[in-house]
Length: 506
Ligand SMILES: NC(=O)c1ccc[n+]([C@@H]2O[C@H](COP(=O)([O-])OP(=O)(O)OC[C@H]3O[C@@H](n4cnc5c(N)ncnc54)[C@H](OP(=O)(O)O)[C@@H]3O)[C@@H](O)[C@H]2O)c1
Image (cartoon, rainbow, N blue to C red):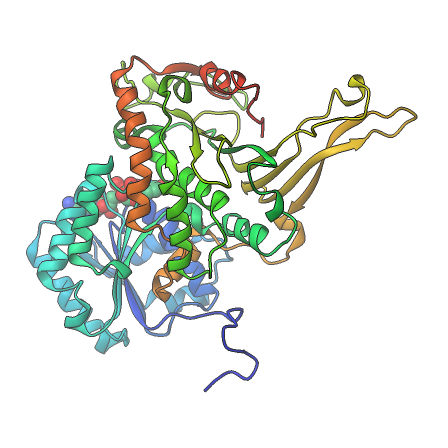
């Protein structure tokens, strides 16, 4: 029956997915405990899971359903965004299953395939299933092949939907990402593949589209005539924690720049999409990434650094090379900054500065659009000494919101102009808290809405930008050291200073 209060196309009322199973490979791992299980709980708590729902964990440990249920409960209590309610958990706990097995164990996958068929009868999942690959990237091929062998991925065989969620990193370079894409596409149809870049699930990132395309104010000035430069920053105060093995192989550029920062750049720079469906959004993002050229002068426009010992929040922290599991002569970068240009009429000549790093003074992600200075100031030079460039800053995290910085007269008898800030804060403007990125994205997977998931062409285009930078760094000497608790290596400041600019201090 149609809802009389809801007009066609009205997406305000909550959408609940069709009955389904969510199979988490690597259900005992860090990501599953910290993010995925809490997100499933939050969805259950908000009434957004279907009646026929099963969470099925798969990992090596010899656990039964009860063991997994206990671990999942603790994970939800610790990590959920919404209040932990016993009644919600009781309903959900009946739907939590676990299957032990190694990825190379054919029998375990045969059991999994049979279990999926049974779940339809026992829990009414209608044969629908989403498979979340929360596993080491090296295990992708074997798990995908097992799914192919057992027919688990084949929609036509089970006459229901089958989807796969792939976690980043999407490969190590262009060649390996192509290999991975080929492998995934061989097993699943393209529309059933969901590549997670959790940044795109953040409310503030989606607000970037609202800001640009729902308002008239910004569009006329969103181009090279008015914009001087764009700075996109993802800074972390933490080090590498227990992920040394992963990080030594990856580094800051592959870990953050290739995916999160280039996706933020694409959303900042793209043209207005014809709609907000997956196809229209991805088409516009792809155009930007296609027009992005790797820096020609890599020595001047790609800077990397590695944190040395230093002080953060009053505590002494050790150098990257002294971290457990890191080689004493490691050349892995923990900081990367690049200057990119987009070769389109809208953006020609506007530098996009991207930077990311660990052990920086604070955790912050933001996009700052810096506007050109007024061509003429009818004031005495001393009146505008404290006037900077106008800036629009989208604060992605924490303290989500938008800041507009502009000059204002200082009260008094003289005409002194100084920068002031006008702030919009999500927490103050809306009473409803934003969903967590994984909560939003998991729901989208179950609903089959791919608009916030990068397509493989985007991933390959991003590697095309990053590969030459990585090759250059591999042939070059050591990364420049920066003291933990400072804003990265001196070279990054020099990169902007050469052009008469400086980094924002967020
Ligand atoms: N952790 C994060 O915050 C984060 C963030 C972004 C992306 N990611 C990505 O998400 C994925 C998972 O990361 P993670 O940190 O959760 O890894 P993790 O803590 O090492 O967990 C790996 C999981 O895979 C299982 N596993 C490994 N080898 C297996 C095998 N041969 N057979 C069966 N199960 C096996 C492990 O099961 P057992 O413990 O039972 O052996 C464990 O459940 C990776 O691709 C990572 O790059 C993680």
